[in-house]
Image (cartoon, rainbow, N blue to C red; front, side):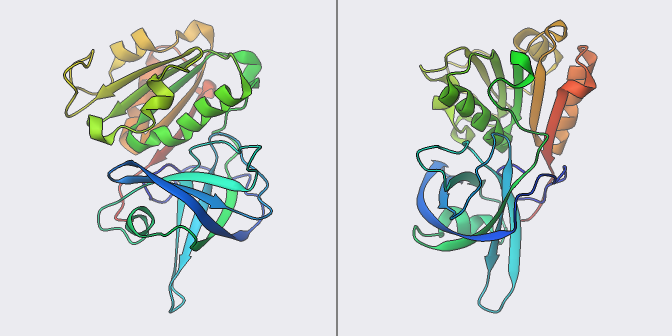
Amino acid sequence: MTTSDVPRLGERSAVAHGWRTATLVDAWHETATARTLVLDVPTWPGLRAGQHVDLRLTAADGYTATRAYSASAPTDPAHPTHVQVTVQRVAGGEVSPYLVDDFPVGAGIEVRGPVGGWFVWEPGAAGGAPVLLLAGGSGVTPLVAMVRARRAAGDRTPFRVLYSVRMPTDAMFLDDLTGARLDGVESDVWFTRAAPPDAPRAVGRIGLRDVAQHGWPADLAPVCYVCGPTAFVEAMTRLLLVLGHEARAIRAERFGPSTD
């Protein structure tokens, strides 16, 4: 799943092996409520951009809690046992507040994965067909992993990113999406509740006209990845179908409301 710390609704195929003990070796905040964790996992098999992992915490009394989080970066050949995930704090949750606010470097946690074989992108996939990434909120996490995988490989597949987020303080990974090293990645970041003064678009949700103007036309047969809350994913999928995109070319990951 993505970064919002709720049970995954999609497929759970391609799970590699069982639980491993990992150590937190680095961490930083992406926003006030989102934190990236770098976990060192011995004998880690590596993962592809778009896959996720399960994290499990065990209390002193034996109680366990498991949550799924998307990797925010593909496997780094320089650190093949490192797994990078980004966690969004869920108000009232039992796992994400600890991981975002209290989980210390050097502490251990159990990891299972990688999970998922459909919602992935690899350099050279689909014969270089253009890629459209539609992200809602923390659903940007597995999609930025695809952007990073493309960049790391020097791949030239045309990418377009449409990222919908509530307000500037909630936006993550903007350096990857709007920075100087995009190498053919075209990104639009739109705000639904409050926008910065220099925003090129008024506050509002992504609509049909936005996808038609800023996405790839259906006749180019792009592969479309959609990730975010359930309502966002369903709305974006409908828009893509209305615009003539083939259902088989739309890959979606969604998450629903939860108290963690």
